[in-house]
Structures are given as C-alpha cells and as structure tokens.
Image 1 (cartoon, helix red, strand yellow):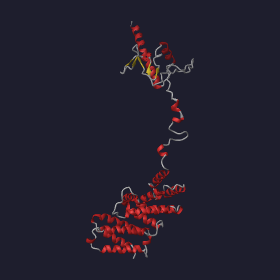
Image 2 (spheres, one colour):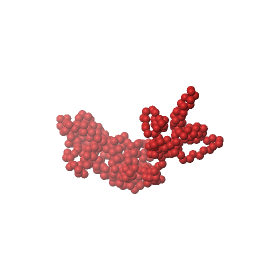
Image 3 (tube, helix red, strand yellow):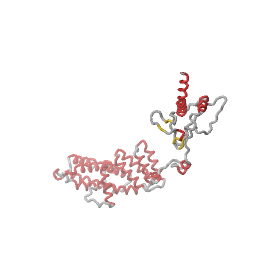
Image 4 (cartoon, one colour):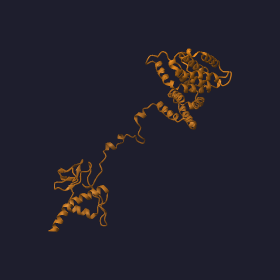
Length: 369
C-alpha cells in the first residue's frame, strides 16, 4: 500500500520535474541527458503545451492563469511554464550519446529567435549611411564658416606660449583654404580674446602680425574691427534708435566696455607691429580725453574716470614711440592737458578722486621730457 502511494506521488511530481528540467535547460543552457529526454517523451508530457503564437497560449496550454507563485496551471492542475516571447517556443537540447548523434530539427518545442522583418533590415531604413558613420542633419546643415569659427575658438581657448606654433599653423591652413566669409568673426573673436586675457595681449599681437605678413588682406579686417571697437572709449550721450545699425553697434560697445583696459593694451601692441593706421592711437587718446573732459564735473562717475586714466596709462607705457624722445606731437599735447587737470582745485573737478589724480601724475612721469 505504501509502495502504491509512493509511486502515485512520484507520478504527480513528474510534471513539476519536467517543468524544472525545462527551466534549468532554458536558463542555464545545460544539455539534458538522453535518458531523461526519452523518459519525458514516453510520458507524453509537455507536447503541444508550449506552442504559442504571438505570445498567446493555445487551447492546450491551459485556461487559467495563476499570478501567484504557482505560475501557469493547465486543465489538470499541473504547473506549466509561462509563455515565452512572441514567435518563440520551448526547446530541449539533447546531449549526444555514443549510439546517437542527434541533429536538431524543427519542432514545436524548439525555441526560435524572432525573425527581423525585411523592412527593418533593409539599408534604406537604417539611420546610418552605407559605408559611413551617422551624421546629424543639424551638423550637416551647419554653415561652413560657423564650423570654422568653432574650431578657431576651441584653439584660442587653449592659446599659450607653449602651443603658439601649433595654433599659428592651424590658422594658416584655414587662411589658405580660400574661405573668407568667417574673417570678420575671426577678427572680432581675436580682439575679444586678447582684451579678456591681457597677459597674452603681446602674444596675440605677435600672432596677428605674423599672419598678416603672409595674408595681407587681414589688414582690411583689422581696420574695420578697430573702427567698431573705438566706440568703447566714447561716452554716448544720445542713444540711437532701436533696430538701427547704429543701435546694434551701441549695444556691442556697451558690452565691450568691461574690457577697456585689455583693448587699450592690445591696440597699443598691434600699433607697435604697424598693423594700424599712423593716427589710430592718436584718435583713441583724443576719444579718452574727450570723455574725461565730460566727466570731470560728474562726481557720480568717479570709477569710470579712474578706468579711463588706467587705460590711458596702459597705452602710454606700451607704445614704443613714447619710450624715448622726441615723442609724437599728440603725446606732447596730452602731457600739457594732464598738467592743466592736475593744477585745478579739487572743487572744480569732483569727478577726479585722489586715486585719479595720482594716476594723472603717473602718466606724466611715464612720458620723457
């Protein structure tokens, strides 16, 4: 009696064991021994119960789904494996034996990877062009000059005496390519970088001078950019109409004014390299003195007066033509004007602080008699 109960219990456990074998086979890839496969086939368990279409169980796979730990249950209450992905099925891989070299054949239990539709595998549907890498439409439609300026900006951001030759060679290659639409932006970028990195002003001036020797057309761009940058030394009393070209220049000049000292230094450096007109610095000095004359009675702009005087001092101490006598006539006139300002009472020049008056004396002392 006990033997019959044991056999009956083993029979009830067979479906569970079969499911365990299938689960181990699918998850680990361990080959199933031949004797176990023959035993499963002889029991007629699992045949037709793991055939699905589009991931939906067939009529033989059971009519109830238990979402608890018991998993899928068939009509007889046996636990079965849940369905696999769409288009697939279970597969039992037989271990080869001495008497049988089994060749895998198509069967309902063999798992097949989903087939890729022909439309998906066609070259036309691929986002990558044949024989090349993927190129964004945004990048491909970007203007050539914009890409060039981007490369130049990346080089200038790392500009230093250590990589001077490399940056110069890179710019010479671009200049030799025949692309000229980017030149105005290049000059604007170069002036801005030089003004914001005053320690490298002399290095930027040297770079521009050596490039101009090989590409003389750069002098035209230098002259144009100079005429725009001179506005930072002029105090605008009347704001141009919005939307006009003059208003655009006015806004640009307002943004550049924070780099007055750097621009003053760079203009003097490129003037020493003969890259500016003969009267270029004279015009800058006249613009600064005109603004100082308008601000000397304005006690609310004392910081601006100090900034103009520091810029003027930077120009005078950088110019090679001022380092020895005789100095240019406009420098002589500058000294006379500054001596007049120094002799005025403080009450007559509230725009000049003590610091400003000391800077006036520094400028006078820097110019040889």
